[in-house]
Structure formats: C-alpha cells, structure tokens
Length: 232
Image (cartoon, rainbow, N blue to C red; front, side, top):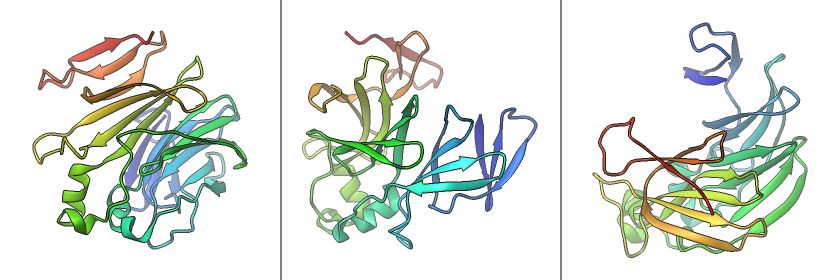
C-alpha cells in the first residue's frame, strides 16, 4: 500500500498506477506513516499539531468507509519545545500482531497500544540522543537547536522483541550541518535497557524479510548503494 498527499486528500492505493480510493486527509495533522493492521484497517501516524495540541496523533483508518474510527496518543510538548515540535513533531510506529509500538519524536518513551487505542504499556529508556530540555532560542532559533539535538525518526519492533530506533540530527558534541545530516541508531531490549548505540552512522531503511537490516551506504552518493547488517 502506498500513500500520496494531493492537496487536502490522502489517496490510498494498492497499485501505485491505479488510484483505488480517495479519502479525507487525516484530521490529526500531517501524515508520517501508514501501517496495515491484521483486521484490514490502517494505522495512521501523524504529526503533532500546534493548532490542536490535544488531538491524537495516531488514528485507525477504515479504508472501506474512509473514516478514522478512533484517534489516540496525545504527546506532551512543553511550551519551550513547541516551536521545534511544529517543525519536527512527528510520530513513528511499528506493529506486531494487534499491538502498536509508537514514539513521539522528542520522547524518551516507547508506548504500546492496542488497535482500539487502549494503552498497554510505557517503556522509558535512556539515550544520549534524546532531545535536551533546552529552548530553541538558546541555539539561534529552531534550526540551530535542531542541529544540536536529535529526534526519533524510525522505530522497528524486531521479531525477537527488541527495538531498533534511529535518530536524526546532531548531538551536543557533534552538531549537524546544512550539508550533512547525521543519523544515530539505538538498540533496546524489550524492557527498555540499552544494548548498543551507533553515533553518526548510516541511514537505516528497513528490516528485510530475512531479518537483515538494510542501511544506506554513507560512503556513496548513489541512492541504490546499500549496506546489509545482521544483529547478534
């Protein structure tokens, strides 16, 4: 399934060539990810909306009716982070069976939800990449602030129960630049304990069906040069 934003329409299609269904845009804000659910519905991961901060950023979309049947997960954004969250307040999610693992970009917690929006668990963790409690104004505005801090970009719930999280952005000691985007990868156990971190590494793309991890080759400017990695 692919998604295409066309004005105020979200178009869902199983065939990228032939558009199958045009649906109203997700009310929670900009759409970040779509994940199919076992019951045929679709999990929509949206972006925090400063105009409606109490809106749920996750939604269960019924493709047959075009309706969001339930929305949930309202991230808490401190006032001094609102400007940054307006630009980078996305969510990332992964699904295992009928359970959703999700993260807010500035959060140090994984949230586990059921497909009806019920909260199962919160898994806090520690990482050097989690955004600090520092206002964007202290770094010459949101852009300067984002160069010195990282946001969670992608979460993968691995078959063995571990979590792989990739962050994008700089760190306190290793700021990003206009010409260079930095990626950092964190591996967590199911209970949130850190198993390993890679600072300023390659961009993560996907977990292959074989369980191998696919990364972008950082030494190549060609988009089709990939690295295959295995977890131990």
